[in-house]
Image 1 (cartoon, rainbow, N blue to C red):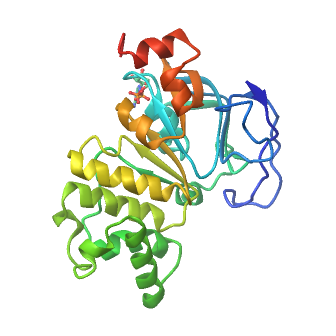
Image 2 (cartoon, rainbow, N blue to C red):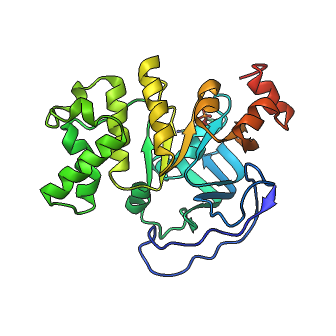
Length: 289
Ligand code: ADP
């Protein structure tokens, strides 16, 4: 545990101009000894809890997630992994009777502040789901969807953006001659890479991935894992996975959740080979979960 200062504020997420007060609290970083205090976290949770009516999704989560790395969230079913992930772009707001307490900041701004512009937030914090969910539109229109929402109408500009995002998601070579084809005609793995391209098209800072490979075959999974490796040089990636081998392969930092709480957060090799908590050890050695 270490004390970090609050990351510098940027005003993008709010509809108004002003400063946001944020208290400095004790938060968890993956490696207090090695973390460079000057480096600003992109996502910062401070005593963050989320409730579905009377059910607790996560409680008192305090952690800092740093840029241009992959952070994996692992833990048994129902431990709050998806709740925490989906809280980072307020996807859970769509569920009635939910409630959040504490602070969850993206780029230094508390995204649960009522002034948060959710459209802007979701453009900055893109999400890729378990099951690929392309729109029933052409490949081109799927990727151009976000930029069009942002007001980009110029065809040449859109074409450039679509090409760039499809190249970044390692799909361009397979679809460049069929951009008008329905996205639904692509294979599952291609659809997932298209969804990644669609998320990249709004120029996000953070990419949330909720079990992005669980519906894919091993070959398509390997392609997504390669892609994650490339994307992390530009994006902050937070991935929820049931697959501990996958967490070990793709992430630099890993957080172990259990019963809605953050039990341990460390460098991935340390968490998997020399965990500090017995609960983590029991989970990674298969004693429960
Ligand atoms: P995980 O992703 O680790 O499987 P979840 O975040 O889905 O865990 O769930 C955490 C807790 O929140 C569980 O007790 C689960 O039953 C509850 N929960 C998740 N989604 C809902 C929901 N839509 N309505 C009510 N409770 C929910």
